[in-house]
Length: 582
Ligand code: ADP
Ligand code: TPW
Ligand code: MG
View 1: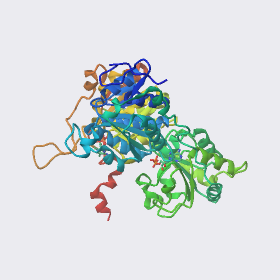
View 2: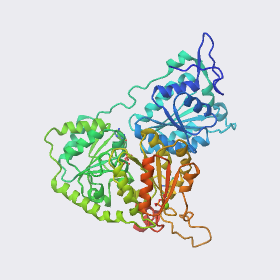
View 3: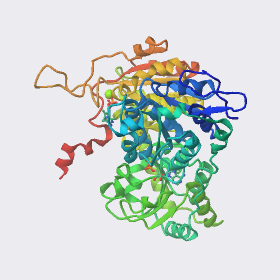
View 4: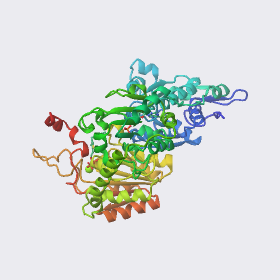
């Protein structure tokens, strides 16, 4: 039911109800349009012109989470989209708030997460004549190149259609970010309540199935059948698709080793006998036929060519909903364009009942390599050094996640990211969320908040001290909403290492921070639990206590400043190293 506006309900709402003519306004229509489409959580920062909108949305039963910075609210919305397959909604004020949210909108688009950035904007007439309005900016024009679609609604009767278009654009086909521009004046526009109710649109089948062509499925199976050394690579698109059972069936029926990309870890458990995560370089190098499921051949897979692929061409099968993704880096011999659920189901069906398992010679070679690598790592994870090294600290966290497989792991940093990804096994789908396609720092607290809010599960954040700094102020938000988030900061006094020295003057080196900083005290400032952990035993106790209590906790894990390496595992991408290679 469309709420009828009561006179002077909140400041800014101008609509009135009189005896024979019920009225509504833009505020109510946006709220009702969101509700009608089951978008009931908003991440944002209030201010002109959306302060009253936030209040009214909260009063109308939506969950409106107020952040300290729009970028973090935006990252929260983006990962909410990934976790739920519904667009995550971020709400910002005009110009500066909008720009702060825009990084996250671009991030959502790059990572193929559905998200809608709703931003209030200033008076169109003044903005377009560039007459210097309060927070003046042509936001629609600026958003356009950074998202999948951008819309502006000028009339209250178009709010329903505007939101419907935004939802559809965000979730259909390849998901991504959408910008919705709502000028200040729109909120106060009044219209007949009944006509308003009729103008709203409930989106039907927002992300329609995309069935692959039978020829493409046959071509893919023919290619897979010829393989002597097949490999399946699962990307975060496969995790997003929530086709978990079908993917497991395909993997197990084919017997093909699978390699999960970072956020696809746990889609099938890392402990699955066919998981080749711990034999990554071997399978990339030696495989002959590679099936990509919801993973792009971008920098994270060395563009599908070169030394890490053994310098020999592979036969690629690629399943993706985006036709333009095919042949992006190397030729794709068997493109399957479709949604992952439908495509994997079609492949399983096409395999029939006597599909030959992947050759045993190959699968046992992969298993052997994997066991060797796991055995090599094991002793390093058990050290009890103080200050800790990465492996000692991560060994503890690996056990904790194994004991609490439904917890969500948020991870960012350089060494803190690369080593945690390798060490911490995941056991369930969509439990690992991290820096994604850009390797961006700053997703930490926004992701943690949305993960807790959307799933109700406990969240463990494993953060480099630099990475944490990008969103650290949101620990107040975590405390304010009492979320079950435990942040562990791998504090090595800096970016990559805490040991750099500036040889030219008194300023500290560019990569180091205040020595011995006590991040745990930040959490205490807001009523959360802070712990300083100097060895793995202390770390283990503190994390377990946090996960048991569900209380907002921040653990300052003291890591040896000399333990990390430059740029973590991607030092080869630094321009100096690239020059040396040439
Ligand atoms: P990763 O970083 O894990 O390798 P990417 O983000 O590179 O993964 O790739 C994800 C891919 O998944 C994108 O190309 C996207 O188009 C695709 N994708 C997302 N959702 C679906 C879906 N439901 N069906 C098919 N493909 C999808
Ligand atoms: C938005 C560049 C990549 S990794 C990193 C930075 C600044 C921090 C690494 O230090 P941290 O981890 O987190 O302490 P550790 O364990 O190695 O010491 N700005 C953005 N994104 C990126 N990726 C950077 C800068 C960067
Ligand atoms: Mg660090």
